[in-house]
Amino acid sequence: MSAPIVVVGAGQAAATFAVRHAALGNPQPALLLGDESHPPYERPPLSKKFLVGKLERERLPIRPQEWYDAQGIATRWSTRVARIERDARQVVTDGGERIDYDKLLLCIGASARGLPRDIGGDLPGVFTLRTIADVERLAPELKPGRRLLIVGGGYIGLEVAASARGLGLDVTIVEMAERILQRIAAAPTSDYFRELHRAHGVDLRESARMTRLLEAGGRVAGAELEGGETLLADVVLVGIGASPNTALAEAAGLACDNGIVVDECCRTADPDIFAAGDCCNFPRDGARVRLESVQNAADQGDLIARVLAGEDTRYDAVPWFWSDQYDCMLQIAGLNLGHTDTVVRRDSDPGVRSVWYYAGDRLLAVDAINDTRAYVFGRKLIELGKHPPPEIVAAPTTDLKALVKG
Ligand SMILES: Cc1cc2nc3c(=O)[nH]c(=O)nc-3n(C[C@H](O)[C@H](O)[C@H](O)COP(=O)(O)OP(=O)(O)OC[C@H]3O[C@@H](n4cnc5c(N)ncnc54)[C@H](O)[C@@H]3O)c2cc1C
Image (cartoon, rainbow, N blue to C red; front, top):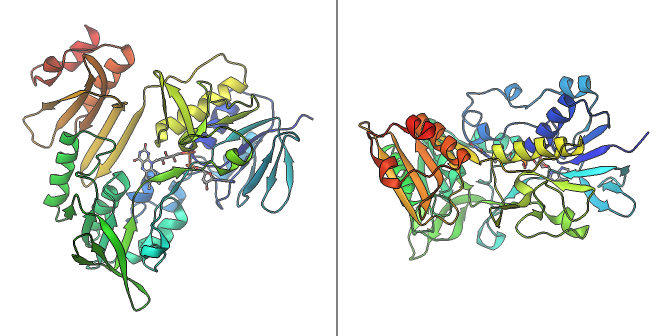
């Protein structure tokens, strides 16, 4: 029997590969190897409902174990791949076992960045958030009345802030950039979320650089900011982004540059090795990008299953993303990279608005805040390559559905 398709890493991309592989009836055997102790699961609830105990652990898996068994997809959890031996077409686990592959998929995700040890990053009471195990460590610390300090005002930091406020903690966010979400969104979106968090009682500080964490009684007790101010804290969450897991690929001589470099079929320079999801860097509109989103990981896993089943297809999905904070739903369609202008479309309800990104007269992306119509029709416009003028989009009287049809 021929060697299997081996999938290293068992997260969103791996699960979606498996689902499509099974649906296409590809007779080639597949084996999923994951270093966590359970089948692939949804990460978004980790900072939201699962963190606050409103979603049971049994609801997290993308497919239950029985599904893989029923499909004849072999699985090995708690198994870390330490090395790829391309000449032998084998992966080597950290227990030293050698496993043959015919095709190899790297779906190894990204790792939460921590703070350096020399500024207290390893003190007890300091957490990052990426896995179920991380939640199992963090959640018991989130007790009403405790002071939670969040380092970093990106999506994960903001979502945990909202969750922790709901649990009754005092929350402070320190963001060293001029504004929260600076790397990923335009100022009107940051402005909205700044006000939202302040209205919910979060002490949100921007242009605030933390210089070190403070210790008392063997655990974290606060932080010192540049300028000398001290913030007291019982718990610290570090939400300063994630780094793509590229070490395996680099050691195997595969090109990596902010992710494992792949082509529009998610194939590396080695025709038998593919990569998908948070770990990979792919071509898009003449640039190279790496995305951290469920949509991207899922669509790339799906695409690889199609390519391996013989379909002639390319990855060109319009990216989308969402974030929930308090009762607010942010939905993003498109990629705002390289935008030159934004316009804001407002509603009579001040909680509803959308931010539209343009490069010249080309519509690139939309951030829809509590506005599913703006998200749905904005996404459709981007998919269709339609570019309505910004002033038309911004006018509240414009019927977005009509723009799609027009
Ligand atoms: C707290 C949190 C909230 C999020 N919220 C949202 C959201 O609201 N919306 C959204 O679109 N996205 C969200 N995301 C992002 C989304 O979950 C990720 O983009 C997605 O999970 C990426 O899927 P992946 O398959 O690339 O990687 P992952 O799901 O991270 O899976 C990679 C797996 O590979 C394993 N692995 C790594 N190296 C090895 C090895 N050598 N051997 C074996 N296994 C290995 C890892 O342990 C991991 O289990 C969130 C992420 C987090 C952490």
